[in-house]
Image (cartoon, rainbow, N blue to C red; front, top):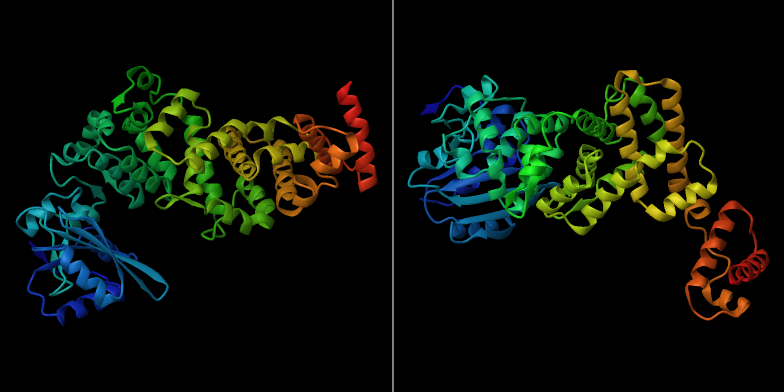
Length: 477
């Protein structure tokens, strides 16, 4: 069971944690299990640590929180699961403490999802003493994602989504038997709560290889099952219309959106946008880069970023409304998430459809959409690049980039001039000037005045007064 050969690279936090626990004379066996062991082997950063305990876990977590000056959250008292959050040197460490799944450590490991997550190390002993009953290291070396048990997906269907995410995240091939079982069981995602499905899907969307993972979702029927899931059952008619055919445009747009978001992010490298198509757009958008980063970094609920939502919007941009509505209902998104995604999908075509954008056109676009206009522009860019592919026409693309740049410049640099100028008159001024009672006519006059200020037809309070008096008279007639 023990394999001393693999070298595990532990973070200072884990080493410090082990030293601390050894000084406390703890009699209960404690093991680091799961992803932290995998990441120690792969030499990845470790900020999430799972500890499996032979005995009572919540009490140990409380003491751990006291020793580390952290905060504790009891996640499942009945099953004995608690989380300790520890801030340390600018990092945020999560230590999950849980009672064994079963009577022994080996039973606990065999009950996990995939072999690469079914390894352990004695936290009170040798941190290089790997416990690997299912051959997780061998599978990692061979770059294979293998289930711990034939009942893995039956026990928890959300593991099918996790299999796709982990295969893309760690560049692994899903074992053929597991892939076949996913295709056969895809409809069972309907048995999982919408919240769990949503959280796993958004982890997938946040990957650098999100487009690759989405393609695997499609070819294992999981994407179709996600969309056709309705109120705990599968809409067979909708599922039939969501075959693997006809998704090329959707996947191409999602891939381009992922690349675009990387190109405007802090993760960008010299090679990120080396090609002409994306490179030209990135060069022009660079002046707005910090503002765009702030916009897409917004989060909803449990660490779901706006950037991830935009990749989902790109995937759905050419889907029928009933398919979009079905998926949004299944994922239990917030009202803001649903509103922002639907707005982007409904408005992205406007950027490419309109060649010339006057100041008034820009004003109306931004006044209607607000920050959602940024999403429409990003989605239009991803869709344009995904649709054109290798047939991209340089002159047309440069025209599109110029339109996108003009619109974003109006929002980020000329907001008070183009988007929402300070009105020279307010509603009370207009009522007094035109002898009007409260009503919708005042709102219409305010809109007309605002647009006249944008175009430069009105530049002073006197001109504004003359404008609304004349306009009110014409509206009355």
